[in-house]
Image (cartoon, rainbow over all chains, first blue to last red):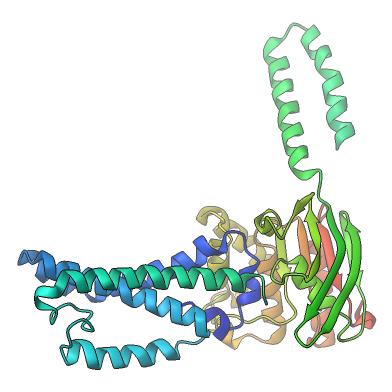
Length: 142
Length: 239
């Protein structure tokens, strides 16, 4: 996400389009978000049926974090490698090792679910703002 | 166009004199519509004022360029490194000048790039495509990025696919296209939004002689005034 324009050399074609940021960058984020939501829909449904609102909040924070992180790293580096490497490490340290705070699926956070989820949501916003700022600066600097 | 609209206004009282109020109203509505349309189309002027561009390492690409472009075809001619592509990228709003400004219909494109971008068609010298997409899917994607409504985009894409003679290959992945076919996709994407300003940068570089002739014919068919066309003519012998 955010790296395809560099990878396939389409930046010149895209960056001269009017309102490129809402049309393309936001569209890219929403596409990534829909993938995250679809792949985690089973877990979300199970949490919703069980009435586990805290678990659902943690799941939502994780689902929002990953595409925003992918977009930020993709726009920053112009390749998908940093996100792929980081995601592999995060999966190992977080969900697989159940490290509180780094488990973006929220299952290992226990009583700290809300502060951890809010932290992830804040990180999501920060990643999106940085991605937007970076892409804005890239638009006129080819 | 002003003269034409003015003439219509002079004729309006004649229609009123007949007593046919409905006809008169229609005439007035038609005149208003023409005035509105002509006001939208009329200005079309690109002004380059004292434009300079310095790259890192104190490399001067452009120095104090001044131009005023009105509808027609402009060819930029120069050897490698003369700054043609830099000027074109600045005009296409994807490179920021070091000093000076560019005005599109009196609007500074540094402050309001969307004023030009919405009227711009740009075919860069080197551009990539998404190899797994077909020509139709690629054009559909770019139409969405340009903000063209889906129904209008579908119709426009069909027209352009026919115009660039890619109907037979339109559903094949772009990864298998030849250089000439990709260039035709490039010109199709540049014409997607029916641009008022078309910028093409060395469009026949890398094409064989037959493809160059085909490309020139294609562009001459595609370009209908009023369009300001900026043409980069490094290979002057091609023209």
